[in-house]
Image (cartoon, rainbow, N blue to C red; front, side, top):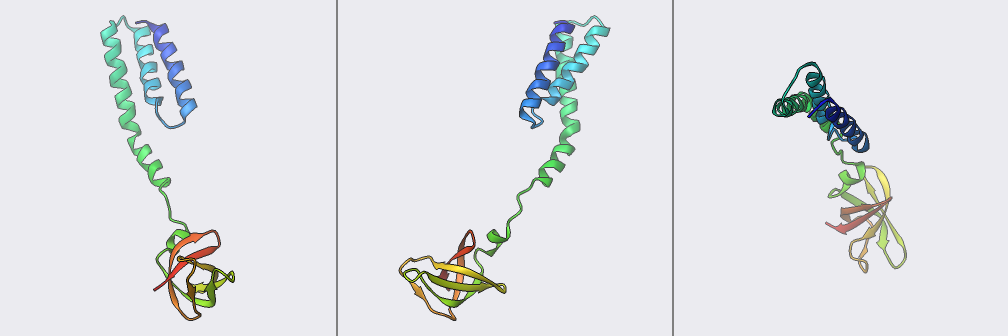
Length: 144
């Protein structure tokens, strides 16, 4: 293996990284760069070059683990308000009737349009219901 091989490897790994943008091959690009520089400066056997590549890539990978953990925590999924409302109790303030197209509930002081979980069910005013699902600006509810 020679300097040209490692130069091509660096370019290939950088292109792969730019294409994925997921920190998939950047460590290999850095390892190939280190190997290229050392093979240019010293007369190294193919086995030595391969060892340097593996060692350097591993070191760069281990150095980036804290960055990856920080990035993963930053991108953690946060429940939306709609998802937080599922399972909560609401009070019917307008009869819920699918046939008539009526139905309103109040949930945490907010007035929502509501539909029954069971389509042919009629839920009278004053009933406490449980939110089963949020569908846009409408709640799918069932009686408690």
